[in-house]
Image 1 (cartoon, rainbow, N blue to C red):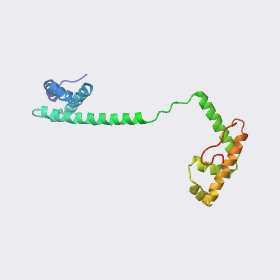
Image 2: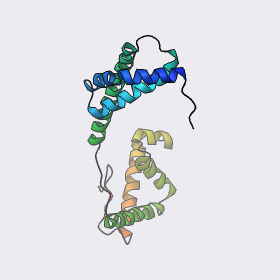
Image 3: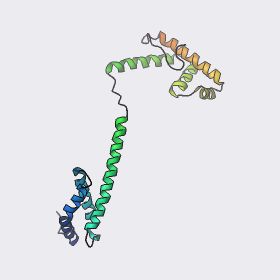
Image 4: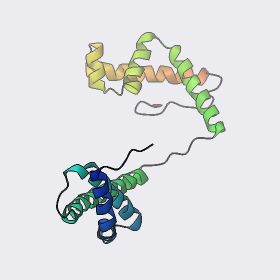
Length: 183
């Protein structure tokens, strides 16, 4: 239960009653109605928090606070609009249907199964190229060989993977494509 009003509370109430219409008009001339109402609330919240230090005619001070609140709301609105524009510019990828997921899972499993049937050396070369996104010179550094040798090993590993995929029961008609696709 609230206690008795203090002198500062009574002065705040008097200031609010006297200046509410002026502050609201100030905000309405600068902002849309919904934002203006929020701004007025914020102005008087600040006034409530500073009520013990206010003296003299508070209207100029209230206008100063209102100006700051209006600027903050405008900045926030601009940021929101920019964020919304960026969000709208992002591509939207629809969720794949169940049939697509089943086919992708089968194709992924076929590829992983074919990869597991390769030698460890071929698996590593293909992983470095496809999963780690490394270039021929980078793979050559890792393997400790020339770039030409790394490229040749990559080509051979892809061909062996293609051969394994052709023998997989779920990979009928599928081919490995990409930089070292069927040659």
